[in-house]
Every structure is written in C-alpha cells, then in structure tokens.
Length: 138
Image 1 (spheres, rainbow, N blue to C red):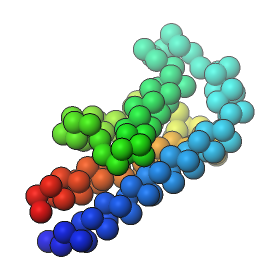
Image 2: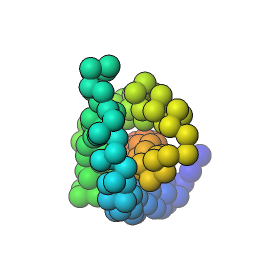
Image 3: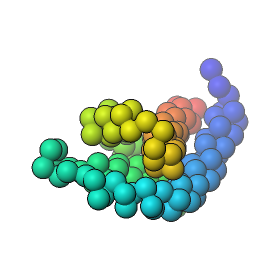
C-alpha cells in the first residue's frame, strides 16, 4: 500500500498532468478545425440521434468539465458520481465514434489524436479520483 506522502505526491503529479493535458487538448482541438469542418459537411444527422460531431462535443464538454474542476479547485465535486459517469464515457464505446474512427482509415489524423487524448484524460481523471479517495483513508 502507498504511504500518505506517496499518495500526496501521486495526486499532485496527476493534478499537474491533468492541467497540462487540458491545455494540450485545446491545441489538438484547434488543429483539427479543418477536419471537423469536413466531417460536418459529410455527417448525416438522420442516421443517429446525434451526429458524430455532436457526440464529440458532448464528450468534450463533460470530460473537460471534470478536468476544469480539478484545475480550479484541485478536487471534483461528488467524486463517486463523477467516477461513475467517467467510467461510462468511454470515447470508443460511442457507436458513432467507434464506427467512424475505424472505418475512416488514415484520414482525420488530428481529430483521431484529439479523441485518443480526450479518452486518456478521462482515464487520468478516474485515477485522480482513486488517489483522492486513498488520501482520505490515510
């Protein structure tokens, strides 16, 4: 089991990394602007409840919202609910995203990188919550 100082160090390192990753995601999102515009032109909203871009925006808002809580206050409100929601937000469990991601071949490189990093941020937030809960136990 980790010592209290080890947990504190890991928690602080994760918080710093979450902050850096949020900043990187902004750059990745900006770099994918042309690809998002191309996707918007070919999306068919009648096939699914939400278009591919809408699905991406929903995940972005939710995941980055949790990351903003960590960035601003160093903690998440209602960690249990946040952990549960983040577990359910697997980027590649969204059928529309998964289908497009694997069927689009080598195209949309920037947007695919953005999605991978967004999912990584989601995983890092889950780890942050676990570390935070471990800290409370010590």
